[in-house]
Every structure is written in structure tokens, then in C-alpha cells.
Length: 134
Image (tube, rainbow, N blue to C red; front, side):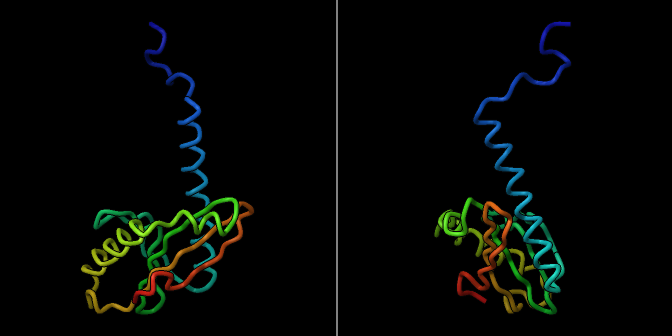
């Protein structure tokens, strides 16, 4: 059999390794945040929900309220918060509106958009209603 056929791909490039590490770190941060909310009595409705042009990391429920959560992780809370852009906020609000279309009360559903920051040690800081909506 010729080299490369039927075997795993060759060594990854440095960029591919960094991308894979970032993906795993992001997944771990999302899991930390999900557990944080669950301990506080929230129920997870969806993870990585796609719609309206963006992905929402976590969608939670607490009673009749729907909570949309954007998770950001970095070495520090400040560095994580700095990774949030106005364009990203707008896309998330559009996706949240798309999700609410499927709710019984539609756009009248009580909701909020939180930002969850995770630092390099795994500590979680929640910024509730961070976008001032809901």
C-alpha cells in the first residue's frame, strides 16, 4: 500500500494543533459554565444551538425565563471579555430572536443574554443580562 493511503493523516501543522487546542479548551469552558448554571438550578435547553447566523453556546431555562449564554475563555477574565465584539453581540441577539420564534410566547418570552467568562484556572464569572436586553 502506498504511503498515506489507508493510514491516518500526516503530522498536523502548528496552526491545526492550536485550532484543536482552542476547540477543546472552548468545549471544556462551556462544560464548566453549564455545570455552574446547573448547580444554581438552571436547566440546559440546548448546547451550541445554531440559527439566525450564529451559534449560541448555551441556552438555559429557569422557570419561564430563557437565558442565552455566550462563553468566552482566556488567561484572565479581562482577556476573555476583550474577545467579545459588537458584531458578535448583534449576531447572538439575532440568533436568540430566531430561537424565541419557536417559543409559545415568541418574542414576548422573558429572556436575557448572559456572558460567561472562564479564566485560565477554570474560574467562572457570569455577567447576567450583559447586553442589556430582555
